[in-house]
Length: 273
Image (tube, rainbow, N blue to C red):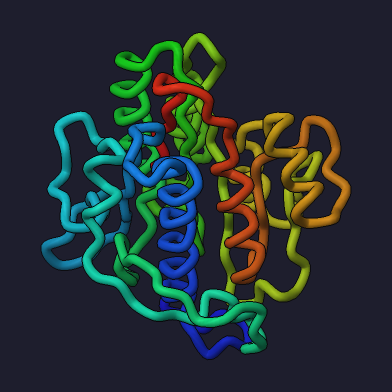
């Protein structure tokens, strides 16, 4: 995540952090405070995974909050718990051109890039949080897990069945409205070239891209509709919730599409990991 992202002169970690905070802000404004007061429409969890001195494989990373027992927090808890507010050029593209004026952005998630990629451990943690959420909100929209990575898992012992089992631990959990969703986005320092969004079939040029795509859930109809509208591209029925070689704009679009749910009542809550 320390690699430079295309021509932006910013690191993958910096771009990903900016996109994540922007998405959390938009969720807060558009879904949780439409009437000016915080409504608990979205439960949220953010975990980072890596390795390093005094660093566990998977660690809680959401604002000033301590890791909760169930692994997620309500909007009343996470919305005001940002570290600080920064003024950022949120419309800054990968080529340094601008599409919007500077805006104030709450920072819930700090830039970070540490060690190896224990993705199986991260997915198993996500499954634990999803299971907790689904057991309490059994009639809610299925929890959504969005995995952002710049590399292949390093804790699967070169056996991708171990990785697929970890992914299935998430996808096999369900509410009465359906199975939990696992969406994967691979960000890359060469992301301006050959970006692949929501493919019908897994790419096969590397075993890692094929397995990561295979582990992804099928994109729900509402998300596919939003993707067609936002990206102006053809999204086939049964497309995978996967992006390969993402640049900053692809990541922002993917996160927006991946968090698109029509919220109609207090029970329509989402756990995002």
